[in-house]
Amino acid sequence: MNLAHCLEALEEAIAAGTSLGIDTAEAAAVRQTARERARFPGDTYVLALVGGTGVGKSTLLNALAGEEISAASARRPTTSEPVAWIPFGKRGELAELLAWLGVKSQREHPAQGLGNVAILDLPDVDSIAAEHRAKVDAVLPRVDAVAWVVDPEKYSDDVAHAGYLRMWAPRIARQIIVLNRADLLSAADATRVRDDLRARLGREGVAGATVVLTRARDGAAGVEDLRQWLATEVDAKRVVTDRLGAAAGDAGREIARRAGIAAGAVAPLVDAARRERAMNDVARATLAIVDIRGLEKQAVAATRLAARPRGAGPLGHLTSAIYRLAGRARVSADPAGYLRRWRTRGALAPAIEPLRELLQSALPSVPAALRGRVAELSAPATVERRLAEAIDRTVGIESAEFRVPTSGVWSVIGFGQWVVTAVLIFAAIWFGSLFVLHQPATGSFEVPILGPVPSPVVLLAGALLAGYLMALLLRLHAGWLGRRWARRIGALVTRDVDTRAREAILAPLDQLDAARQQLARAAKALEECA
Ligand SMILES: Nc1nc2c(ncn2[C@@H]2O[C@H](COP(=O)(O)OP(=O)(O)O)[C@@H](O)[C@H]2O)c(=O)[nH]1
Ligand SMILES: [Mg+2]
Image (cartoon, rainbow, N blue to C red; front, side, top):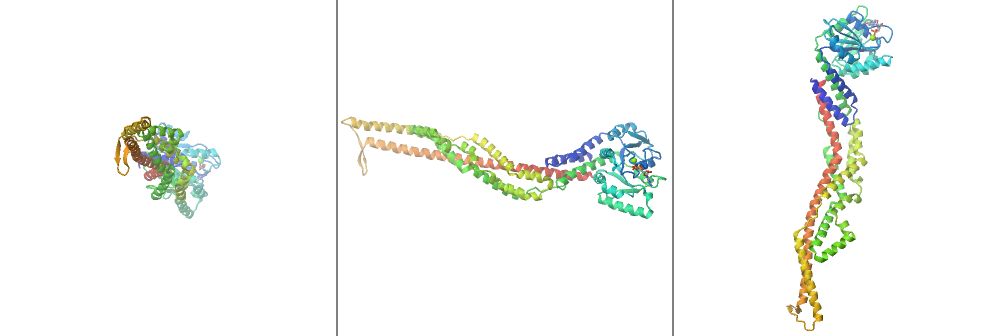
């Protein structure tokens, strides 16, 4: 186990848990404590005697010491402040660590025999004095090892009531269970109680822990076993890092457990294929409201409108001006405006229905802790707002880029129309002159069926025909350009609305999934930190 890796993985788990909306305060406290503890070097680890009132913790410490270190008494509660019994000569080295642990009272023990351990006698976990319990609660997260002291009368209470044991045992690498006051039991009972205790511990998740039976008072039987366990060669630094790693592992796994995530890989909250289908439906319905066909029609009309003043000659200017004044151009030939007015074409609520249904149907399989977040995602108002924003953004960006196409061909046609107009005027004057002059000299053209047709008539008819053909050409050309442009902006807007709608709606879901993946990875890494 590598402590740095464990703390990193815990960090990941906290980050992921936070973005999933899970309470990570406790894990953050573990991380903080680990950082602080790691700042105290030295080769002494701290073991706390933890247990209910009157089980003999203080007496046990005194028996280990062979002298009175901590006051023991039949009067309860006796120990009100943590008392430390530390290796000889380590007072200076341990001063800061003990201050951090909140220990004010300390005695030294001869270094040989007991190993590099500082033993803390704590107030009772079940003390009637609340401030005693608070002291235990404050110290327990900070100690490196624990001797859980129980007695035959109350061990079942102690173990069961020990939310303490259940909570802390997984976070402590080095621990022992001391069944004190064993002299109250007959030899047969002692074996039975020991087995029973082991079974209960197993159920509390502390299987395989060392259990010793002791009699701390009057002759101190079994205390030797405890002393031996303490004296076992252990690397104090290792005890400390193992403990911090175990705490990190447990706290991180707890976040994963609450999020309903197993270590390793997690399946997405919503099945990918179903999600894709729902999203396609949403995109289709959204595009129907945006109305790409309508947009294309507007684009074609706008192109024709733009062609008229340039390619329709003198009359074109007139009709365009009338169109503009009447507001027709604005309404029916304005693709950008048409796009911006998408809201007038229908409500989004039906469009998002497939997605809402999908999330609702996924809800029962979502872990309880995440249900709130997923429900939030499927709230119609939220989804609608996000989708509307996405459309507005697309519309804003795309419509700003709209440039009605133009062509030099129009100017050529326009010139032609001026010429036609000039010819028409000329023909009109010619006609006029026929009435004014008495002897007009007019040539004529021999036309099949009609016979000779006077030149001005031919000229007039030819000019009208040319004008009509050029107007037709302009219309066709502008229509062709307009349709090409319309198809292009239609495709652009379609693509944009589609991607942005997906993004807006699926991004929060993706974030949730990403956080769950991150948490699963962290939990996997934390398996090494047991
Ligand atoms: N019979 C018996 N009494 C004990 C034993 N150990 C401690 N006691 C008594 O139990 C009472 C409480 O002891 P104490 O050490 O103050 O308990 P603490 O609250 O856990 O610190 C005292 O009267 C001790 O003398 C033991 O092994 N056998
Ligand atoms: Mg005590």
